[in-house]
Length: 116
Image (tube, rainbow, N blue to C red):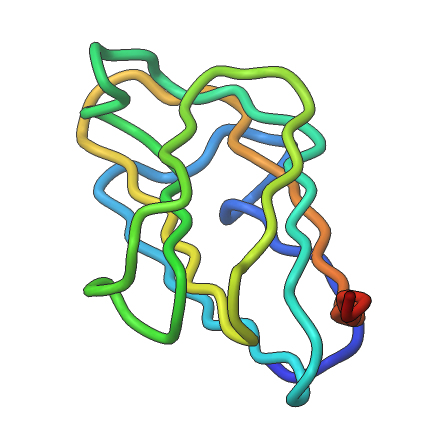
């Protein structure tokens, strides 16, 4: 995705999401910008370490990037990429299903540090 802003949602949100689902998004900002992801609402099955159903956010364009966070049951959360790309994955297992998640993304400019 290269839009300047947009929305990511689990399938069917705000109704129950399907079981055994995987959705992946890669958000790319222009050079000199970062990606900001605001998780507005999240209602997923909770398991220790968010093992069952989750939204996983990583740095860069793939699942190999540094983990920014894994979320399954939290309040509004904002995360930022260090570079210009962010990889986002939604996964559900075959058990309990909640309403899912809704998030918005936007691009933010890098702030230049002042030289001393």
